[in-house]
Length: 362
Figure 1 (tube, rainbow, N blue to C red):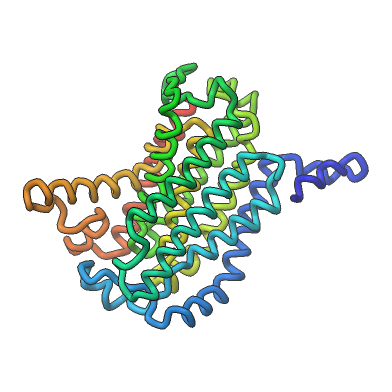
Figure 2: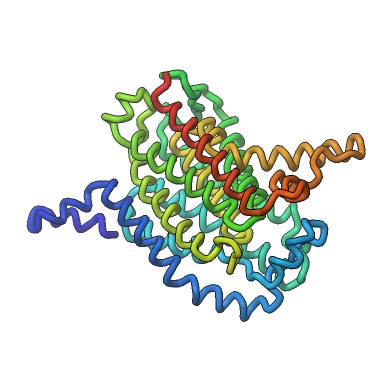
């Protein structure tokens, strides 16, 4: 919205600053942070009135959770979504369709997650959310719409292509298989972040780290000069997603203020599903799907731990981990919650650096 002020720069020269994506990205961080922090207390109070018993805690989870986390409200992802929406609508160029695709998936997955959270809260059971089939169908429908939408904006040379890290000018043509691949990535990303969200602050910081990395990537691939220098595929209009990614960082910081141990609120599926979907969508738009698997490697690791646990138990009757996802395994081993969280953050930073290195290594 504020971008349109730049069109008045001929009369007021200082308004030309609104043309710059870097300036508007900074504004988006501050705006999203302010919205989340200012609205946070009111949202938490409202959630507590609607959830007297707080989020239902898994009875098969670590024993400490049943005691220490009882009564904490969920659906705190609402403040993240609010911060992202306000900041993006205020600072992004709203003529850019990629911005609307990203918002569509984020808010759509936020709605799916909130419906799941609402059922769990009202049924007072962590297992009584939306049925797995219903939830998955809703996620797939949103992802299919987004994948087709992105393909219509990318142009024939990029629409069905899959870029390969470390190799310049390589674009694998998946043809009609690209849409299913993009859908799998977006849906998988949403659920991977959802699985990671199990300890105070564990998911939101890696989400912010990944969003920061993709904020840089979107800015570079959306700029003809930088894309050419780095031998990346130029994607016209993708640069505006830097504002969207910056909004995720700002809203995440605001949420972390209330989610820092001991958490005053949990993001719930409302936030985790939306954040994963948002990151997956940006990776599809920028043709950095493989890079996202590196940057979001922590989410991948958590998901793989669940898959391995389930497959092993069904085939052999034995569990590989004491409990899945992986962070609960280390809780069962006696690691303190802050130790697990901070060490996982360190892993996320290392993976982010590895992902960024692919931009130059060709």
